[in-house]
Amino acid sequence: MSSRVRPVFGRARGICFLLIPLLAGGLLYPAIGFPADKEKAVTWKPIKEALLRVNDQPVKNWNVYDQNRKGDPLLLEIGNRLLLIQVHERKVFELSVANVEHKGTELVWDPPALPAEPLPSSDWLIKDVGFAYRIDFQLVSEKRLVDLQLPHPMDLRYL
Image 1 (spheres, rainbow, N blue to C red):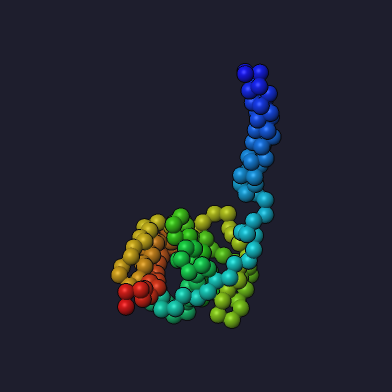
Image 2: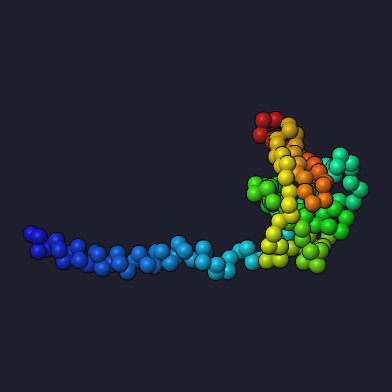
């Protein structure tokens, strides 16, 4: 009886030795750095009815954009300056205006153009304040406190 079991086990072990590298290769495929969807250009849509204050003063020429309607990451345009805000990671990157293209009210940006180092920032506050999300942070080198408030999407389920 044991003579019958051994050949089956031997074949199964051989199949496992063949499958394990294939499965591991498939699982590691995205981690190795092969091209993924991150290589595509990202379209940013404006968020309406947002509020921005810098150093407790309103800003005249600005706009905030969202790529997936989830609020992270955000693209903040203040005059000719573009700041990519990664809310959950608490990082702010300054983007080159040359890498961002205006298409009507939307912006198109190429993700590989992300700078290697974020701007020094501190005093992060991410809070739900009722009808809006509040995101505050300080740009350390410029000593500027940015206060951004984004409206909640309307929840009409209970009406």
